[in-house]
Amino acid sequence: MPMEEISIFEQLSRRYYELSASEKKIGDYVLSHQGKTQAMSISELAEASGVSEATVTRFCRKLGCKGYNDFRLAAAKNSAAREKHTNPLSGAVGNDDPFSEVCRKLYDANVSAMTQTLELVKPEQYILAADIIEKANKVVCMGQGGSMIIAEECAHLFATTGSKYSAVADSHYQIVTAATLEENDAILFFSYSGATKDMMDTMHVAKKRGGKIILVTHFPNSPGAAYADVILQCGADESPLQLGSIGARIAQLYLMDILFSEVCRRDLDACRERRSAIADALTEKHL
Image (cartoon, rainbow, N blue to C red):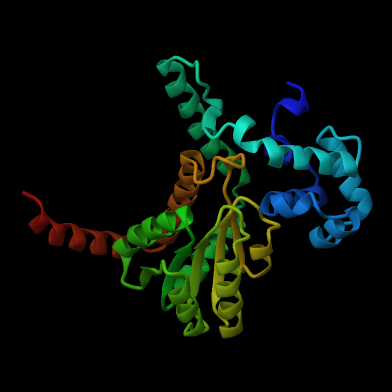
């Protein structure tokens, strides 16, 4: 398929894993600042991404562009035609697909999200994250928008093993919580982009307090990653209009399950006892 027939940002998502580490820095920045990128000079993008101008040029050519100006033009055209040409559905579901094909495409997309996440697992990062959670006096799960739904699910899951887990949804209360963290406390932050302003504000305050930050994101070189003590990378590519896709959420849920299992298996007897007590308490809630 010619590059012009798909979004330049979708092209980037498809080829993200072919990029070098330096080129991924550009990719992370571009995907997090789509509207801003087309107005930046090559020097400005290089500086913002922390790479050289030569790396920016190589990055553009890997996406099929002749150079940086060609890339800027493609980004501008995409902004002008996004609503018409960008598929808002995951799995490349089309208008004319039979229902059975829709089911198959979405199944494949969701399985692919988990497969990508498995390939991105760095055991040492999960072990370090489990160490932080194990030592923490309290663990607060946070996110914005759709990511907050995953954060609440995480807090609910981990709360079945102890009382130190909670979720904070309101962005102002997130700041308040960060400002009262103790040195052994931790924040488990979910952000697909790793580049939301509220998240950055909260992380900045948390780091000043000496709290630990575990970031779950798709982009390990995103602005939020600079604040994180541990980065857990999830798979699942999203095009610009597929925000909060089920595939991305499944990838984060799978990642969460890995972390939960690592934390629990360090003291299975205690985990079993607490979950048994909760199960007994909940029997009164069922008919």
